[in-house]
Image 1: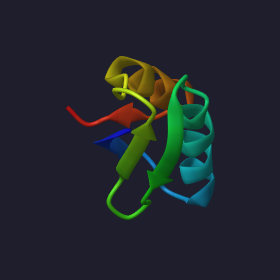
Image 2: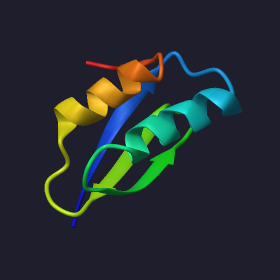
Image 3: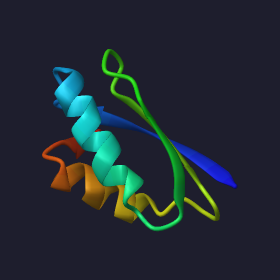
Image 4: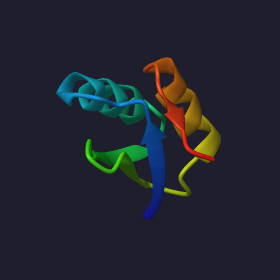
Length: 68
């Protein structure tokens, strides 16, 4: 199992957090998703290596972006 952290930009409320969590949870292999609204911290745990491109695509699908 591996874990990766990202910073999500643009979230302003609990609904934003839920949207990001829902989309990232659907990425194949993802086991656990934690999102902190105040910091924008997104922590993803997966069976194998975390697919950063797939996580970024899921965050984009939710309507937000990852900080570069």
